[in-house]
Image (cartoon, rainbow, N blue to C red; front, top):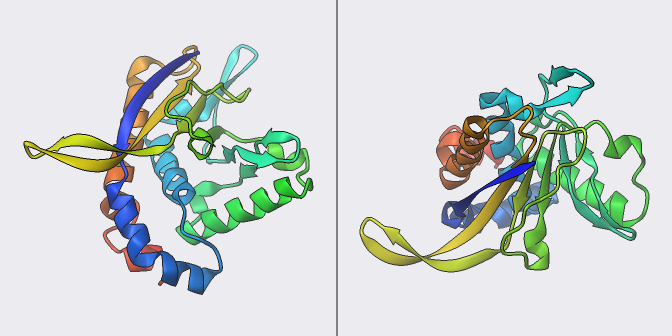
Length: 213
């Protein structure tokens, strides 16, 4: 297992959430959080780098043509990892609704084994506990896991000027038997690009339509 790191300027997502979160919650009954952006960014990156969406089964590599995304949520017995099935078919509303549904089932101790098996990639958010950076552990038999962390205002160089921006460090732990350095770094850069330019890369330049406003 190896881990590669990057940083994400979360200001574009902050701006979108500030503009649309109230109307989104009023219409859909669920908040516009960070998980929908990260999940859809991961779906896009998995399509670009399918090795990250593969796993080893005995002596064979098994590649998946769907994205079942495991998400780490807190339950009464600690962290649980339910699966968002076929995330490639979900909208922002679809992801947020499923995250809320699974989190409530985990909190109430109703999550089943079936709901926690079969994922092809995992997203875990240590940032909710205050983690600045970590090397997340792969969720077998998957080959990759993306770690989100806390968002901190940091000085950044933008067009030659130092400005304060909300920055999140992200980490991708991966199985080097399947995923090499080029794929792992490329995958994480693709996630970063989508999160820093969500209107173009995740919303087809139409935020209102993407959020079903």
